[in-house]
Amino acid sequence: MSLEAIKKIAETESEAEKQKAEARLEAKRILAGAETEGREIVSKAQAAAQAEVGEYCRKAEAEGTAAAQKIAEEIDAQCQNLTGSATGRMEAAVSIIVGRVVNG
Image (cartoon, rainbow, N blue to C red; front, side, top):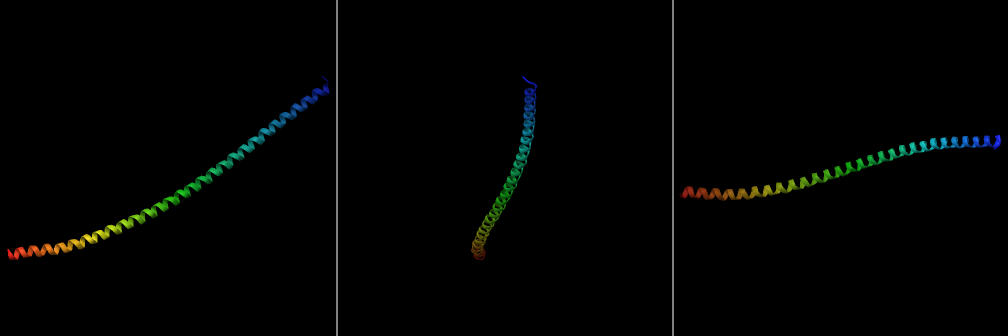
């Protein structure tokens, strides 16, 4: 082989190594960019999920409060009915007791 051919081969090999090094650097830059972008996407998704969970919790709490209020109103109505019924029975009981005491 001639000296000129050996120089050409050495230059070509040197250029190939340089291109490989540049390609590695570019791959590292691309990977770093993709990782950063991926972290941003995950962060945004987590924030969106937390907001959605918060909204579900607020809705559930509002529904629970409304249900509890309805139940409390129903129980209050039942208590009023029982009180009214007991008052009527109390008057009858007093009348019977007074009649027994007086008539003896």
